[in-house]
Amino acid sequence: MHDYPGSCHCGAVRFVVHRQSPIAEAVECDCSLCTKKGVLLVGAQEAELEIVQGQDDLNLYQFGSKTAHHWFCKHCGIHVLNRPRTAPERYAVNARVLDAFASLRPGLTIIPFDGQNHPKDRRA
Ligand SMILES: [Zn+2]
Image (tube, rainbow, N blue to C red; front, side):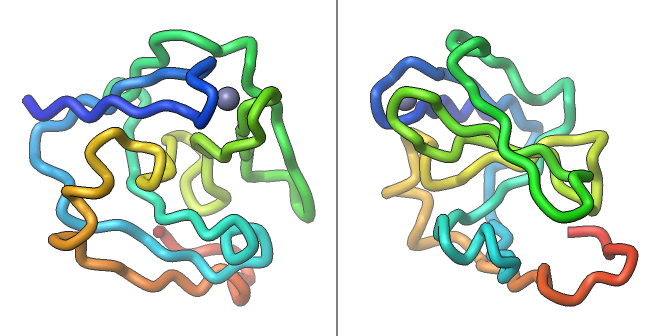
């Protein structure tokens, strides 16, 4: 099991992603929100994500079809995770808030995702 702790900037929100395999890739979505936030996303199934603290410190942002749920820390504003339009049954975690991001980044394969043109959405 590979455990990836992460947190927002102020530390109010802490979580761990539990995975069977190491994180080797991240998705760079070009939708209007992801572009402005500059996030890199790593998918996590419901069972793979453990929110350790700060569930109540997360604020929800939605726009457009309001299918996706974007959660950010209400204190420091950092985007922590979301449920994507493409797969609202799972999470996508902001890879940049993982404790191991600096060491992960050089080995990450970045997968571009066309978030601007998704009539019904493809899988991320
Ligand atoms: Zn915070």
